[in-house]
Image (cartoon, rainbow over all chains, first blue to last red; front, side):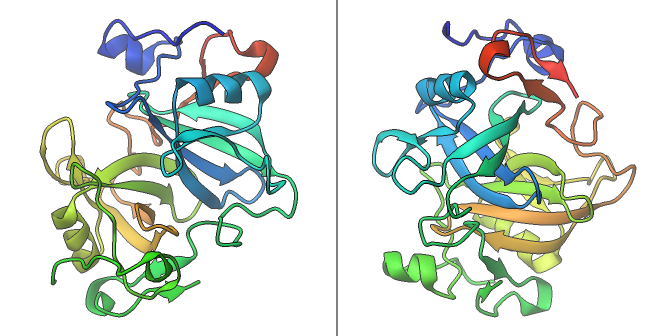
Length: 134
Length: 134
């Protein structure tokens, strides 16, 4: 697919119908991935332009692994391929939302859990309590 | 509250009960905010250490506005205050998930919409179609 365009102005960025993702200084956009069936937040990751183009073209989630410094077809080794049911973009086009169906054992996190968000931070008067696994 | 500690190692970061958020080079962590009732993704924003400490202490969402370069008590002017029902952290502690109840008119996005994610990017053979408002 052709390179992603830049939006001409704020009005076009926020109210237009042109997809003009704003990559940061490292060439990345933030991507929030939820389970299309349960709505659960599974992971937060990043895409560069190549990963984003592949995700759109194939309908499967590709990311940019910042820790490994390489393109990452999620599930290529684990079988936990994410089929994208819907892709959304936010108002200023620097964040994406993927609703996915997870193949394989249905997991997502490299620790073996279904979601990466398996710990809760207590609030207010419990603020100093340790993280709770939930 | 005291400064946030650094995790001593990867094992503690991922499997420990110490909250050790990993701020990026700009001193920020990514924060995903969903509606505690509907599960809808409302917004993606950022917190610095001060915003995070205030959020934990008050139970209301404080962010760091990158565009304005200032601490941001969400809803202070709009009335759309976000009461945090639950705060979670991901495996490598560089992303947070807030489940919130929104006060005021229940909105979130500065464009007047409930969620910032009001446009859909078509996939696969429809990839070149314009964004759809949904």
